[in-house]
Image 1 (cartoon, one colour):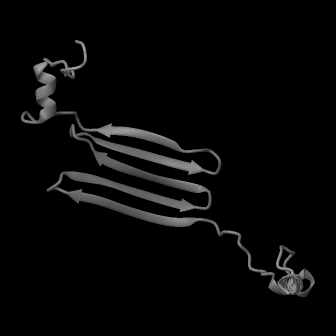
Image 2: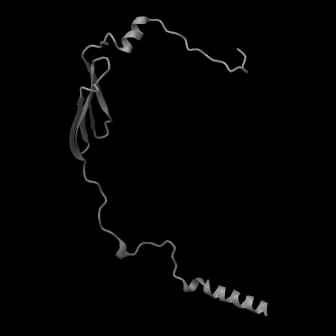
Image 3: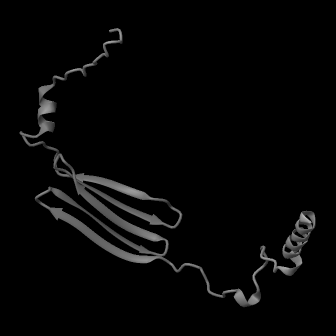
Length: 139
């Protein structure tokens, strides 16, 4: 009797798993109704921006400016270096020409008398780093 029930349940499971009664859910080409005619082509790039930071309390002074129209990009950025000079980079990109930069420095490098940079350059004496050994290591 148990064998008959198991065979009956097996036949019922096979009938439920019949793939012909289930809709095919695999990959197929999209139907013409689902196609979108929206273009994903990007428009030509065009922008213009300019920003700067001028904070005396933190001594941060830097900025950036850039203009782009189609494949032509031009801009510059600057920063005041710790030695007092101003570094300015002027650049352009025209099509496939690549990034062409011109770097200029204005002002003279100088360190304040109390700064750590000034002391390390003036002293000229440097101490070699010390190596500490574990008690198990040989010296």
